[in-house]
Length: 115
Length: 111
Image (tube, rainbow over the protein chains, first blue to last red):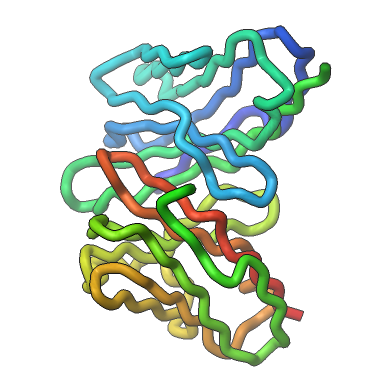
């Protein structure tokens, strides 16, 4: 069945380091992948997305890498800041008109940034 | 998110009671989703609305769960005869430009 999972449930880094959060997915038909950040008491906030016809996409301080061969997705955060501390979720979607845009989420990784 | 508000923010109820959770999105977004987030878990899809109709209810866990949407705007999620396993954060999201914008959620605790 469809599933999206994470290798590491927690990640602790020092301020200024680069962070890498990983995600594995099992549905090879998925064609749209998103990373969300969720702070305590808030809903998930969109960070960056990538479509299956790409293998890399960059945003401000963030980069998403997609390896379709091994069904792996990663989020890289450069120069991590204390404000980046949150739970990070990957999510996937199949944009074929049948899934209505509903997202399948991974379990989440807790990122803690130490000053 | 700024485009979706939910109420109440917290709800504590006794087992067996009915609860209603409200989602109030900014106008103009026809696609609306409900998700559930259990403690320490990712989000689980419940139901999708296109306008006032729900073409995908496949995530509703039991017939105790129902949802409606009126005027293509406000949506309510109703849980009848609540059980302790219903305790979770219930999140509503709208879709715009292929992104989903989430509300802050309602934390439901069933005692």
